[in-house]
Length: 171
Image 1: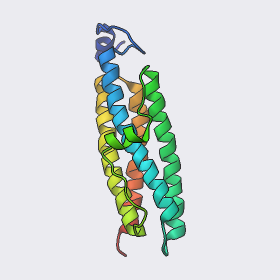
Image 2: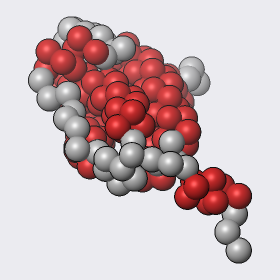
Image 3: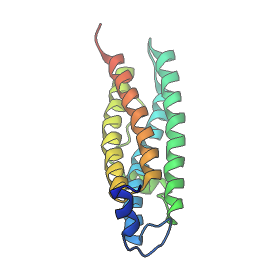
Image 4: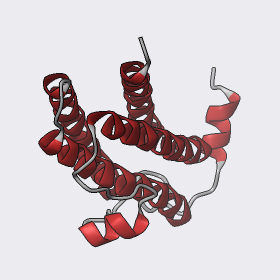
């Protein structure tokens, strides 16, 4: 027995462009993904910056954590860009596009370790907000591929937000 949601999805009249999404739906999804891609790309580079430049008594722990996180961010950036290509559209691809479109801002390399962690926590909050925007768009248009991908990003980001926040908690 088909659910009401399935019947409604099937009964919609669409001008098929890619994967059953209209051009407008594809553009709306891709616009939200490109925003996340820009944010994630700046975040990725910020993690690399911090990984290379962290100093202090927590060096080994934070250095390794930043490397782990930028490796995950690198995969997420690739996944987002490839998801955009699935729709037959183009992802942002230049540093200029990333910087001009990102809600995240570049920072220098002279931060103490605790300020680096605070900066990453702030990035996570911005990334989560954008992830939920993409998730809402995916749900609105019945895009379960994007929905599944973003839910995984959300789980990872929420966990790392908690871990980084715990690192800063006073003993």
